[in-house]
Image 1: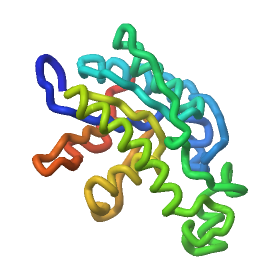
Image 2: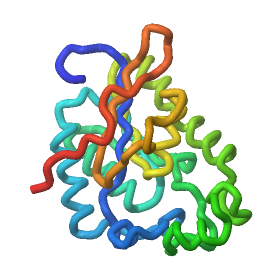
Image 3: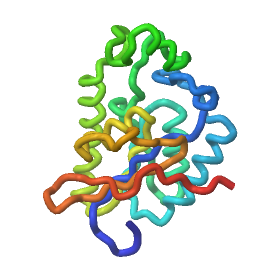
Image 4: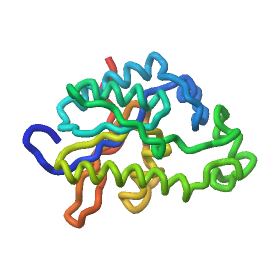
Length: 199
């Protein structure tokens, strides 16, 4: 939303690419920086979302998300980035830095792996962060941006939509999603996995 529109909106942003992303390895709590492509993706997000009437930008504390969030906030003078540990990536334990296929080969399902953050706990903390930011959007009648991770974004989309589409949610690095307020007081995805052109 831009201009004089006062409808509350939540933008869910995925951080730019990292070296582990490029290798299709689990990231979890490994705190690695954006790579060159990821930095360009973050800058493109800042440009693409510059017209949004943002009143709040909140991010996972991990560098890849926080640096992306700063690029988004930089297009809005006076707007800082707030860090929220509830937006941290899912904790993959000893599987971080390894292919998902290794985990699946051993347990068949990530949710059965004993050293991985339990899905109910993960979803509970992520939605707590979402609810706090959603309250700001409603109170301000404006837009807020949450900058986080693939697993975090998909958990939010699944919760607000009441399920996943066939094939699941796509969340490319450097993408953004728009959630709009419904007449019933909930949220609904209006834009999913939109990725700005990276120059």
